Image (cartoon, rainbow, N blue to C red):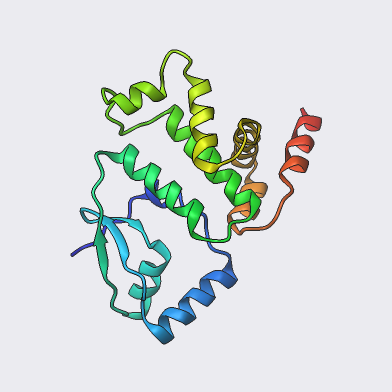
Length: 183
């Protein structure tokens, strides 16, 4: 089976630090790829780093097929899976919170006629998005709001974005307050 990498899906996954990637590569080289990659049809949903390492080193891997109604449901699964998967930094967790909130706010690929979508984006709209995101992550609505602000600042500042991708720790409150001072 030819596996397709969907950039929109892969961008939802926090990058590994160089050390994490090297550790994963060493583990796969010595023990093989123990965890199956998750695919939707032939689109890779989970296991991007393992896939890259296995291809580079010509190591066999298994796949598990997962079914989704649409791209919205696939993206939601990816984010929820990542939030439970590894030891995320606070910064990475905030980025995931913001991505899920954004997905709920702008659910491209969703079946806009589905009851779940209609309930999510009801008359109170944005409030439901914040509430749903806070429920999924088990955080307060103020944390979701801070995560959205933090993600926007990171996205608009290439230097911060690059350090965030590397998993460098940045105090979320400090980043937000520094940005407010500069405005």
